[in-house]
Length: 516
Image 1 (cartoon, rainbow, N blue to C red):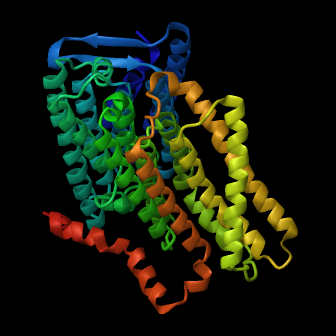
Image 2 (cartoon, helix red, strand yellow):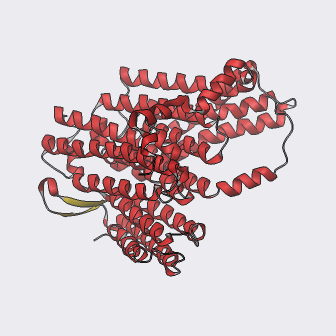
Image 3 (cartoon, rainbow, N blue to C red):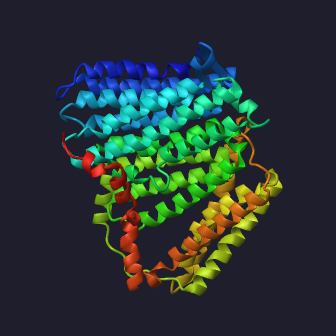
């Protein structure tokens, strides 16, 4: 039995211990909870060592659709280590954050049980375990969101989360039934091996349901509102949700990557949904004044970008994105209070130079030229890159072009221009370096990006044009920010184009927020 499969056990044992001490200031509970997460982290790290020594393993009991299986491979080992590490950090933070809080023991019990469910999810090797783990994670997180049940906003956020997450659970369960009917197996590995040969109708419908489930669980447009309303829960819950649980939809796609990639329609849908969600979330994020709300919209944008990576067939980069985003977002939420104080104490700078159209055009030419040089160098050293990978890197460089434009707009641009150009080149080098590392770690167990046909090229061009236009608009923002039309648009964007209000009306969110 591999060590990773044992990682949920100390968490569950500590959860039972904490649940029996629900009163105020249960002195031993925080220490036991932290030790349990540390033990889970040690087992997850041992699982990585086990993988290198013994290779991939599967623990399975039962047969047919009721098969229960846990799987250790590069994907599950990475995700298990990530979940255990973030859980340990969040639990350490919670020990001080919840000190003296009423029902502190209940909080730790729910947090530990939810972490255990996530660890089972990332190891799932059969359809039944996958679906059951998703349901368990949703139940645990709903209770954490209701930790302050007297707050109407918390009840509304929990109700909205439950409806969207449960809809995703239903899609996963129905997809599992269809996959069993299509392939006669509940083993995820066997389904992935059989998928590239051909997809029967039941499997095609199952893939569509999996894409729907991933979109719901990653808060993709237009059902993203639940993710931006969870700030009424304690900060550790926000950190766990944004740094870990919201990535579950991406893990679902990566775990069944061979199956999803066998459907061109599903890949196209992921590009469209993910790309639009990324652009929408990024634009709304720029209009937010509250730091945690801005971080929530940042998560929406990042999850959209991750779906875009999956749709382009860059599965290893999508997994790298999950790891990087989880570590960054956990730190961002837990350190948000200190960051606000630091910014408030900082001396305000003077006026910032606003680049004109000419400076923006030159900046994009410089950034793209630097990217082309770096891409050519890596292609010569490590082999030719797929069009999808090159397009994704170019989208990232569009963001750095804004810095170059600021350098060109400065009154004495020489030194600043050199620094911003170096930042653009550094971003390109980092992208391809991480690209190589991701494929070295996980590329062997994930499908390669599909050959770019007419559909793939159309989606690539659409993505490049969309992200490029938004990057140019952002760079020129100081010139049109004070126009009356821009001021009105800013208000609409700050409210998320009111889609969340429409969702409230559609599902009765305001009614659900009232106490019974």
